[in-house]
Amino acid sequence: MQIRFGRIIVAAIAVEVLAVLALILLVVVFGPSDPTAAEAYAERLGFWVGPIAGFVFCLLGGWWVAKGLSASHVLNGLVLGVTVAVIDIVILLASGAEFHPVFAVSNIGRVVAGTIGGWLAGRSMPGAVSST
Image 1 (cartoon, helix red, strand yellow):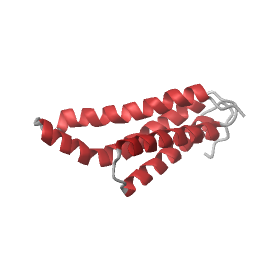
Image 2: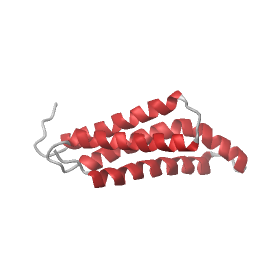
Image 3: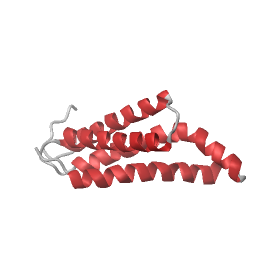
């Protein structure tokens, strides 16, 4: 059993940074120009962008972490998803943000996405069994 802790840490940080950058980009492109209105817009948009970007980037990160392994693909993706979820929870607690159910759904989605990414990496290996 090989767990790529180095890749997991790099991917976890990248997932969090890329999700924030996705939100910033959307606010800059589609948001209001007034700073106060843009901040309110970012907060509302963040409830959608955070979970969706977190899922997509965890899926890609899980695939990247697990690609090229001979075994333990799903485990590596799962560990990435859990790591990202823990980082996200720590950030939420440190910021004193009020709890919203979307936070739980978002973090469960990150774990699921990382796991699926690992699974996909295992399926793309040469000699992997195909269901088609």
